[in-house]
Structure formats: structure tokens, C-alpha cells
Length: 70
Image: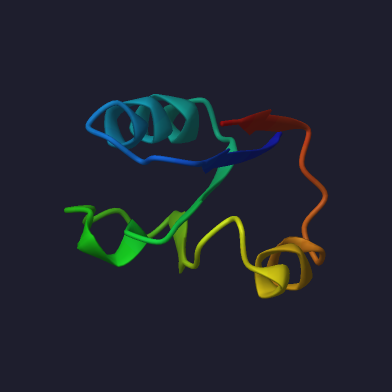
């Protein structure tokens, strides 16, 4: 499954993403502060971009997400 986690990536986003990848899901974290997160997992994709920007939609349009968590 392809999963997008976006919005305010608080302390909940990282542990949630790590659980999803244990189940062989592809996880994308996208938020204005994504690069500030302390993630050392290669299989989690980070996009540091604000969801309110037009480019957010363009940047993520190449993915086909099964689940979006905001």
C-alpha cells in the first residue's frame, strides 16, 4: 500500500510511519517541516513542502496513494 502522512507532522507521524513500513508499505511524509524530523529510515520518503502550496499537489501527483492521513 502507498501511504501519505501530511499536515502537522508531530511526534506521532514518525512512529506511525515506522509501523507502516514494517508491514512492507511505502510511506511518504510531506509537510513544511519534514526535513526537521529525525528519521534515519531509507524506505520513508520525505517531502519538505507546505500542503497549502500549489507545488504540493504537483510534487505528489506522481504517487498513487491508497491512504492519506492528515
